[in-house]
Amino acid sequence: MNVLLVDDEQHVREAIRLLIDWQGLGIDNIYEADNGDAAVDMIERLQPEIVVTDMRMPHRDGVGLLSWLYAEGRKCKTIVVSGYDDFELVRSSMKYGGQDYLLKPIDPEQLTEALVKAKQCWEKEERERQIKQQRNIEMNQIKPVYWDKLFSGLISQTGGRTQLPPLLQDEFKLSRIEQCRTAVLSLDSIDAGVAQKFVHNRDLLFFILTNVCNEFLRRDDRGFAFRYWNSEHEIVLLLWGGLGDWEATLRRIRDGICETIHSRIDIGIGTEQPFPGGIADSFQAARTALKQRNLLAADDGFHCFESSKAITSSAAVSMPSLGDYEERFRVAARGGREKDIETAVNSWMEAVSGMPAISQGQLEHWHADYKAMLERLNKPVHESSAAVTVFDSSWRASSPELLPEWRRLLHADRSLSMEAWREQLIASLSELSRIYQSGSSRQPDLNIMKEIAKYMEQNYHLEVTLQDISERFYLSREYISRRFKQEMGENVFDYLARVRVEKARLLLRNPHLKIAQIAEMVGYDDEKYFSKVFKKVMSVSPNQYRKQEGEG
Image (cartoon, rainbow, N blue to C red; front, top):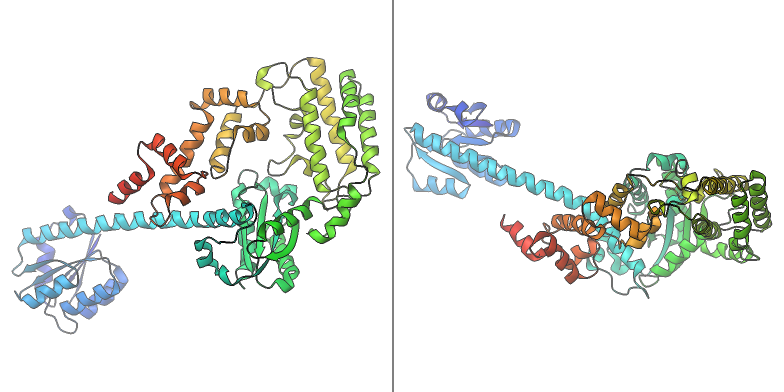
């Protein structure tokens, strides 16, 4: 801690130096100035925590110095040591924040007491400043998440929304907007190598991509990019400015993303709609455009809803069903002969190879059907492995978790590799055959419960159900419920509630957020239910907790 002594008499400054046990007070450096102007220069350079000043000095006097400190908003504490018992001087000292007014000759005990008081006052205010700064940092980190939540709500509301949240109107000046168009960026389409880099930090990838998008969109007030809360792999671009050249805007964004993460990303483009009521329709059109893109042909990653209609109609012609091939797959796997497995797979590949077009939506549909088929065919021997699928076991090691498994079936230009598909089917059926022959199933990963806990920590703001967890981790709900409590010491929903309450505690520090808003931000649509859960965990209601924090 630093102290500045300001007095035009050198012997007074020397006396103060000698009379005080500076080391005992925890004060490291003592500086001197012989007038107010010199003191101002030293304060700007040295930032002392305490200033001890005389009142009558040449040039700028003590009142002038105190007035300057007050006007500049300096945080240092001031002590006046003066030979004048003058009411006006005392009043000026109090007016400009003086901590104490001591008379000469100097009493060492009085000055020591004043220095201790000033030091404690400064330290207390500094702690409060640091706490406030940390809270501001935390709130600034949460703010973009809140924008994501509000914009996602414009899409999720059924029938469109006619009333915009006031916070969005104030921040983005949305009241003047009449038309809009949405685009959807799919993380499923990034390169596998890039996905691998972000496999353990999906949030960082979302942050990078939305930042790149908003550099282009917010610069000219063309729109806003946000992470869509109801999806784990989509970023939505809501365009409202410069709609006449939306294609050029999106191409600049695409090029910017490619330059930043060194990967292509596919963009689905919706229709132009009235704002805000048509946002949901435009979003669904953009998502449909991505789902309906033709995987049999290479493209530039731009997929418009209008041009996707023709692909859908041609791909729907004589679409084969995997269910028709289940029995031959089962017989081949039971038989255990590699040649029979290859023959069964080739019969399916011949059926799909004759199609004029295959959309992403169709491939996802077949992929889901195939996994369900393997679940039926793989009757587990042990309950603990009840939901570990053959498909999962043959692909978990090679497929980055950030990308869906079917992405491994695409070439670098995002066209479908029939050979990779054929090899994947043969590999998974061969694994099923080995299980049949051994009569046992694989044991699940011992760390799977920790993965489930991490998933809830990262997605606490979403509606997380036991069925969602079951489908994501390929484990039965009953097994998850029992095993999670065994390993984590509490059941799934008590754990999720505790995570949500911890996040809510931070948000409750912001007096501008309503309890209902905080409830939504941590995953509760019902404010009353949120309050009930909060009180169960913390033993006080959210309002009581906020009041206690304010008093503290």
